[in-house]
Structure formats: structure tokens, C-alpha cells
Image 1 (cartoon, rainbow, N blue to C red):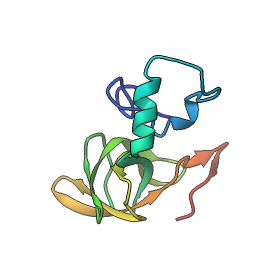
Image 2 (image 1 turned 180 degrees about the horizontal axis):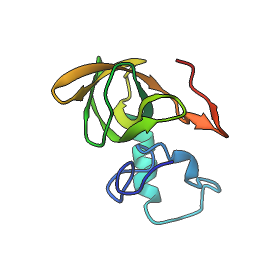
Image 3 (image 1 turned 90 degrees about the vertical axis):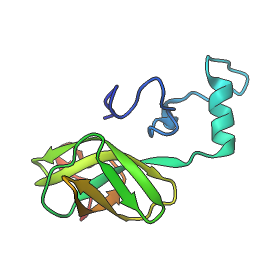
Length: 130
């Protein structure tokens, strides 16, 4: 689940925070505050995507750590240790062209991580195959 103030806030579009599915686009004539801006952003295309990360090395991912991908840099919005998965997991915004592999900078070291689609765990069962 997104955390307000970390993964999303008033300055970050729902389209960039992985919440585009919550916007009621239909019917087309339904007007709401911000609709024109969201439609313009959707038509122009967004440059970032909201993803999950699984750290493959030792460490704990935290808010505001840099994520390096071949497509450019991103940022962790929230992270921590998952007791269910027994590893560090995080949510992040990365460039739209980022692939499945990245590195997270933790205390000056670049540690390998995997980019995955959340959710990590649902109903007590791990959803991500590592």
C-alpha cells in the first residue's frame, strides 16, 4: 500500500505513483479537479513508473536512496525488511525504460536489486518469484 507523504503526495501525479487505476475516467464527460492535467500527462506519456524492489545483497532499503538502472536513476519512496520474504523490499519510482535489474546505493555501496511488480505478499503468500 502506498504511504501518503512517502510514495505519494500532492506534488506527485497518481499516474506516476502507480495509482492511475484509481482515477475514474468514465464517463468521458465527467469533470473533476485536475482531470485536464491528468489527461495531458497521460497523452504525453509519463517518464517514470512505480515499481517494487527486492534487494539481492545485504542491507536495508530506505526512503530517498538512489536506484541506478541502465535507463537512468530513480529513487526509493519507502522500504524496509520483509519478515515474510526474509529480505529487504522497497517501492520506488524509476525511469519508464528500466528493465528487471538495478542497483541501490546504500551507504556509498551499490548493491544489486531486482525490479518487480507489487504486491510482494498477499494473504500471507509470497507473490514474487525470486
